Image 1: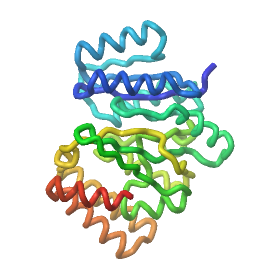
Image 2: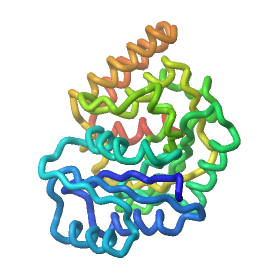
Image 3: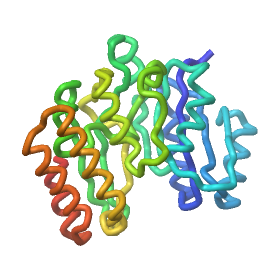
Image 4: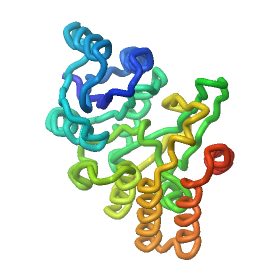
Length: 269
């Protein structure tokens, strides 16, 4: 029996062509995972028909349906309820990203070698679908470095994560009240001294576009990130530097898209 599950949430704005690429990148992994998909509300007829065929052919292990859109965190929690009793490793995957062929093998091999690590991520390569521009986003590697990076940024790329199932014994599930469910998850993990790691190589290729930063101007999301950073600064003793970056990120979220694009590019190198 396979002990690796890949979980993916799909909603109405996802593209069939991008979804096909995402799934092919999972089918072509050097170490296979059983694929579990949750439809977060109603999706297009084309996507649902395609997924039904993939499920019928046995390429997808599970296809969950729900008429109401409840958000990513809610969908991931539903999938975790299905996979946690049976699978040791849980791989996150978005419906518009592409995993490199050896992604799962490298992450699972790492977790099997380092038994104290509960979740492992990797770098991402962003590619702009409008301009063709590419950029590698690097993250810290070791646990303490990742914790310090809470000051400036999200310490791990959520779309690259492979969890050990025992991670959720300590952290429980995603907080469905959060818009930044991944940042909240990492802070809770660090507070519980749950060991995290990041492989220093690209594991997932992520699409961006010219309007990506313009679409991220959300005051509620910006306030939430600021308060999460302030909480982390208080808990981990980041001091004035932590408070400064918390407020600076709030201002960055509200800045024009063109300025946000320039600043993010510089900050994430």
